[in-house]
Structures are given as structure tokens and as C-alpha cells.
Length: 442
Picture 1 (cartoon, rainbow, N blue to C red):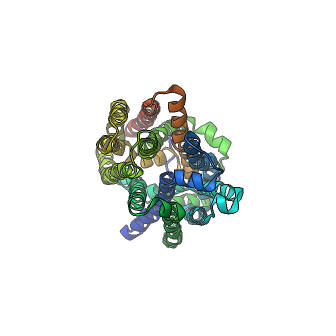
Picture 2: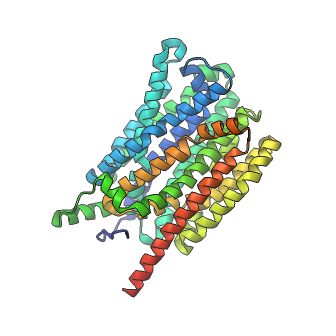
């Protein structure tokens, strides 16, 4: 099934486009900042907020508390995506950012297990679930807004600002964690220092809400609503979307799989693994995350621009394959000779390759679906992929490493995601090429 064309939208003023970019990126950035700092301090949080554990159990509890948010992301994504496709992108995005900041604030203010007992565990889990529910709708609705404000020849470039906001948030989260770890005593960090990033993140919510309240609704969505009023159209249910768009859903799920795996294994799990299992100090682990995030921040707009010029397939597929091939020797180098140099080399090389499929990915996902189901379609694949290949990846890789005894198991996990991602890009670009050829002969 080919993507339906929507009515032409009115000319967009550059200032309106800039506001749309900023408003879309700020919430996406807050989501990843929240998730990044939670991962950075997950060991401290697991010790303070849950019943006492020791050794490997502490690491498992930390990754479980991190991954719990991803179990509710698909639910939040579908419900908020359907809301965005019916009430509009602006209404959904404004509600989402308030929910996200509320969950972040709750984490920052929750008393410890030693103070209020099991209620601390319940509050942390509840806060993570609220973060997950709201984050489930964030990427899809924000990316839909971005795409619908973008001229056709710049969709990959403008869509790459989603990757930039994610990378900036990783970099900011890594920098904050690095500074706290190096400038506070372990006692101060445990007593109050770890709470500071969450309280700071919560302040972004009201600012983001103010910015989003001043953005006009997506012109393409407005054009669709106006056409719908003139010619009533069928309202598709979730079952209808799955039944009518299986090719788009499966192909984009593959793209999400490799993007989320690269983020949550490469940028989050490996630095924690290096600190917890390889003996590196926590500050070095955060420095590795920071290096990788900065590379993504600088490179993603360039790869988005390149995709607009030569096509997504030529940019994304070679980088994915090389990423899958190099993950094993780079991880082996880190495991066999743990140190700051080997960790930074791992993050530097893989983040460079990641940028080539991160930059164009947002536009690839958004263009796969017509405007009337765009937020819902993206929410399904993004959150399902994020749950299976992203948020649960640290927990799964910890389990794989423990069961197999192979500390290089994460490299095979990465390789599996690369296969799915490559197939997804090939399917989507083949469909796009066929559509373009058909239009030329029409």
C-alpha cells in the first residue's frame, strides 16, 4: 500500500518553522535527558529506593527500574498517537511535556526506602511509568509536527533535529553526571547530589509547554482536517492500521530496532558495563557516553543533509553494515584492555557510524504513513521497538552476559538489530523508488 498524498499546505514562514523545530526538539530532548540521567544514576537509585540487595542483584534491579518505563510506552504511544491524529499535534505535545516533567519531578523528590519503606519503590516505579506513558507519544507526535513543517527537499535535514535533540540530551546528561561524580563526595552524591539533574529536568517542562503553546498547528494536518470536513473520511482503528499497513509497520520497526539498540546498548549499557564489570570508574563511563553523544550531535545534521541529496539507502545501509561488523572487535578491545582510551575509541567510532542512520531515520519513519495515521503509526513501531530493543536491552544484555559467560554477547545483539534495520531501509526505499518511478510514467 502506498502512502497517501495530502492536500498542499500553505506557504510556511521561516519563523513559524523555527518555532516548530524548537518546540518539537525540546520535548524529545527532555525525554532522552530524563532517561539518560536515570540510567547514569540507576545504581544509586536502586540502592536508595528499593529493598537492600547486593552484587549482581543491584545491577539487575537498576536495569529493571530503568526498563519498566518501556513496558507502558506502547500503551501511551498508541493512545497519545491516536489523540494527536484526531485533536492535533499541538494539543498532544502540550499535554505530553507536562506529564513528562511531572514524572521527572517525582523522581527528584521521592524520599528514600530507609525513610518511607516500600512506598519509595512504588513512587519510583509510578514515576517511571508516567515518564514511559508520556514519552510513548512524544517522538511520534513531535516528528509528525517536524515533517509537516518541512519542505520536501529538506525533510531528512529538518528531521535530523530529532536526533540532534536526543544526542544533545545524552551529552548534557553525561556532562552533568560526570561533573557530579567528580566534584561531589560519594556521601553527598548519595544523599542529595543525584537528585539535582531530575529537579533541573523538571524545570524544562513549563518552559517547553510555553513554547509549544505558541506554535501553530501543523499546516499539513490543518489541510487534512479541512479536506475531511468537505469529504468525510473513514476513521481507522488500531486494528485497521495494522491490517492495512503491515509493510510500513514491519519495515519501520526494523529501522527503530537498530536505532534504539545503538543508543541503549552503545551509549547507555556499555559505559555502565565498563564501570560495573570491567573496573572502570563511573566518571570514565560517563565520559564515554559524552563523547559518543557529541559526535552524534555534530554529525546527524550532516547525514540528514546528505540523505536529502543522494538518498537514504546510500547513506543508511553502508553505515549500518559497517556498524554491525565493527561492534565485535571494538567491544573485544574494550573487554581485553579496559581503560578510558578503549572506551572512548568504542564510543567515537560507533557514534560516527550511528549518525548516518540516526540523521535520516525520523523522516523515514514519518514519511512511511499518511497524515491521518502518522502519529499512531509511528507510535506503534517506535515504542514497540524501543521496548524490545532499547529499554530492555541493558537488562537483556546483562542476562545474556551472565548466562553465556561471554562478555562480548552485546556485539551479537547489535548485529541482530543491524540485520533488521538493513532490511527495513531496503524495503522502505524500494517502495519509495517504485512510487517515484510510477509517478514519472503516469
